[in-house]
Image (tube, rainbow, N blue to C red; front, side):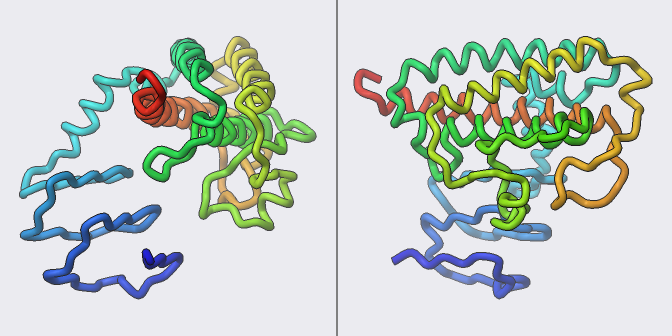
Length: 255
């Protein structure tokens, strides 16, 4: 039986020597200062956010970011948007990408759209998360809507407890179809488009009267920062989705 360790610090500063770690999965962990020395693998997969990533004494951080940007140019548009026109251009690209990707997804059986690839979120889960991200950073923080959170929104763990999601009126245990999620998700995307169509330089620098949700830190949130979070989350999760969608298509009959 596979051992499962969660919210545990027993391995902090540990030294693992001459152990068989084949198949080990480390997820949502702080790896600052971690070293893997004189070890071997046929395939070693590393996904995450790293200020520096050094492999065999070679800092590959810049190469990895440049290659991701080459493969997914929308990442650059989302990351570098500074003017209203640049925000609008980034959102145009994001809408175009998702339209094509969702058309691909609809060709698969519904059950496949709930399937997790390598333990990652399913395509439906990803759409639910993007719905929540828009509700929090746009609907609540920027627009200060009276009821910004849709019940099907799915926040990221471990930042949100069961109490947090209940307080926001979310139902993470729900099992909606893709089209049920998209009914709310596409409506929120339209709100984002309308918001950007009227966006001005002064609005970009306005301080929001709310934070995205209670679990977020109490600090100053500026409209431009909040909108950029939406852009970046959309761009990164589109990257994840097309990666996993290709795997689902390959595994489907006739794939």
